[in-house]
Image (cartoon, rainbow, N blue to C red):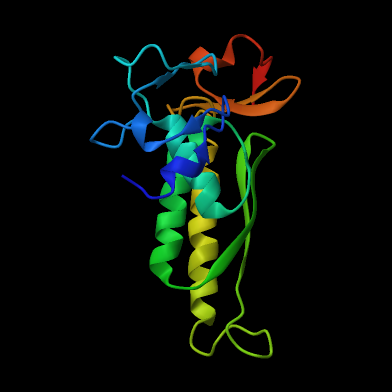
Length: 172
C-alpha cells in the first residue's frame, strides 16, 4: 500500500492509520459511521473515508475545514488541477456560506516571481476547475456526498434531507 500510510492519522478520531489497518485492496479494515465515530472492532464494515481524508490533507498540505462528504469532490478537483501541469500551492480549503472554498496560488517558476511564459492560460484553466467544484459543492451534501441543497438556519450549509435533521429553517 502507500508508503505514507504508516504516518497518517484519521482526521476524525486521530487514530494512526498503518498498513496493518488496510486490506489488500487499500480499504480500511475498520469503519466510519455517520456519527463521526470510528469503529475499529467492526471490520466487516469497510469505509475508507478516514484514510481518504487524511491522505487528502497530506496531499494538500492543509487541514480540511469541511466535513467528509466533500472529500471525493476535492480529490477530483486536485486530480484535475494536477493534470493542468502548473505547480501550485494550496492555501486553504474550507466551507463558507454552505459552499466549498478552495484557495490556492501558483508557485513561481521564474526568478522574478511571474508565471513562466506560455503558462498563463494554466492559471485560467485552474480557476475554471475551482469554480466548477465550488458550484458542485452547492448541490452536494457536505456530510455524506449525496445530492443536497443549500439550507439556511443558524448557519448556511449544503445538506441532503437526511442530514438536514430539521436544523435549517428554510432553503436558500
